[in-house]
Length: 267
Ligand code: IPD
Ligand code: CA
Ligand code: CA
Image 1: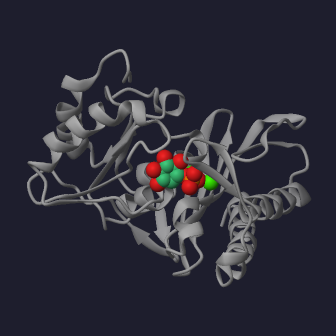
Image 2 (image 1 turned 90 degrees about the vertical axis):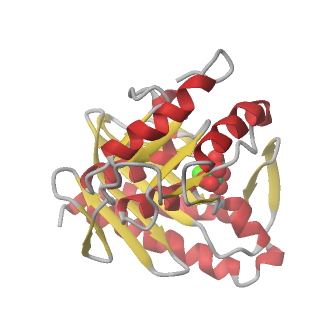
């Protein structure tokens, strides 16, 4: 196993322990508002600290980009760790056991290693560039769907950016008419990991952040799928507008998104 993947796994397990311990007494969690419908807890912060400490021990010079601490520039900017210590904070604070730790490593701007860890189910999704993707060490693959008929798509509602509600609902309506069903489970990282492992056929969401998608993107690519922005291009890290699935299914999803792209909703 790649030594940097090994460290990412170690970090995700340490964070997972912090999260699960706190989840057992979720009423004691301290919650603060970062923005409209956007919360951070002492657990997000403690998990992030544990991850950063674990990475720093082995790689003190690497740059770290994490949701709660921002950019911690290291001497060696070729290596960038992108961290979401707790993806699914709303689920977590409500006592819903569906959230994950997401850690990715970019080397010279390219996704190189990825871990998404669901500490409740003990499911560890991993990928190394060029080496495929795994769930608990077993190879996973994206379902090679060709059309929307019969598929189940995962999505996220734009709850932090409700100005996009109309555009979102238009896209939802258009896709919902053609799919078997939709899921809004509350963790973009797990949505992407589920696409990578073939549990879910495709995914779309408006306004995600790099730490929501970086690890999931490598998992999906290594599992034979694609991740793009709303035009099929590669601006999703900047715009946050993200689509994922098999290459053929992704094209079909984009067809239903295209009519609603406008000024408010770019790529
Ligand atoms: C959120 C979750 C959610 C998605 C949001 C994300 P957080 O991350 O991934 O599923 O709909 O857009 O911000 O805030 O829980 O880390
Ligand atoms: Ca997140
Ligand atoms: Ca988070």
